[in-house]
Image (cartoon, rainbow, N blue to C red):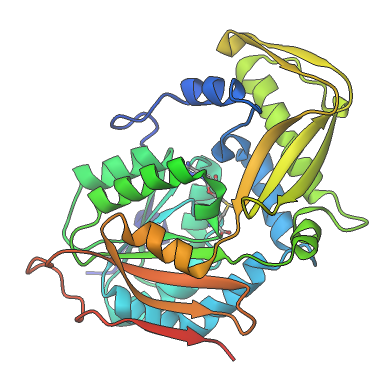
Length: 351
Ligand SMILES: C[S@@+](CC[C@H](N)C(=O)[O-])C[C@H]1O[C@@H](n2cnc3c(N)ncnc32)[C@H](O)[C@@H]1O
């Protein structure tokens, strides 16, 4: 019998309203009514937002993607061995270009199924197709929806060993309370012994971070990406935002070690959002928050994750400790179905 061709090895399933996921409209309405108003990160990712994010990753001043890729290029075989699992889910997979490095190493060890979760259906289709064309034997089941719905699907379709990835420093795009909620959901989804690989940008000089999160001269990827949130509100909820009325920017808040991406109002704004039944008022000089990027202290990250039923197994930092990959293991005795090696904790710094 011949092996199935690439097209037969990729499918994308909608999981948009799975489980007890709060409806998207409710989340957006509630966050717009926060003080200061904000928007959830996932709202910005349609095909335009995803394309702009890819442009951001190529900015000469944006180190995150390059450093993470370097870490995966060096350590993917070791990570794949420690994950010891043939079912790999990923939260917010995007283009999955870096994930390919890890999946390639996983496939050298065993049959591998990849389950990316993302709100952008187009990117799930294109990344899934590219992966199965490049990686012989890989099976891809894209889960189209928000993290909670994807994790809910994984619980409903449990098949023994599972690992969860959260790359691209996506963990830092949530508030502390949201991160706790997400860790609870991941812990509920992973069987004992299951691996959780999370990357984090580590705290550093405020000037360097300001340069990293604003466009260098001649580029507009960050500005366009932030303004796309207004376009999304106009398209999805019939809002009346005029993009030119806002200045996109990023600030570093040293008190909270957080880069905040904002849209500053050039004049007093009173904008109806009929699809959400609200009118948003933003005085001149005040802002709408369109993205947090928390910068972690290593110990704080480890404590935060371990508090939710995980143990650190290994971490990999770049040569100047700008960025790290952290592999945790879901606490508890693995069942017979779990074939992972006994736990060990290690730290390595790439030189
Ligand atoms: C910052 S990009 C990172 C993409 C990729 N992981 C990388 O490292 O290049 C975040 C991705 O996560 C998706 N995303 C963000 N929040 C999400 C959520 N709550 N549920 C599902 N997808 C989400 C976005 O659509 C986007 O593709």
